[in-house]
Length: 127
Image: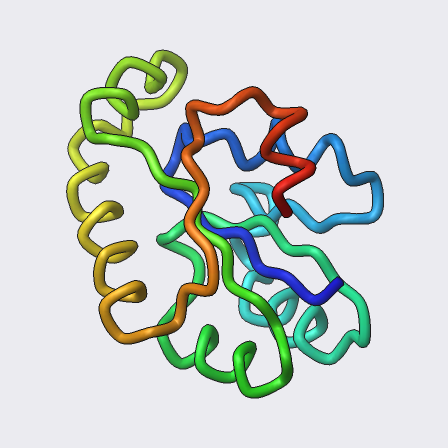
């Protein structure tokens, strides 16, 4: 599987990543090394990367597509993201994150969009 799962903060990436022990879940602990981790992941023959919209650029996604990666988006409405955003003070950036997700879909980089309100087990099967 060569897949990048991209989603806004609080969309369930880390919870879903926990179902795939060999996956890479880029979060704040990687903040100093994100470009390196992305490059290393794209060089792999088999990789499942979970990443926030703020951590990956359009050029990275284009490169991933050219290397055979599928791009999967976890989608939630702004109101659902705001409800889930209990442990983070990210509400002010959620609209921008949604706008970026819409942009990567508009330019044709998204292979599949998944409704992130589905149960985690169902989402895991859909990947």
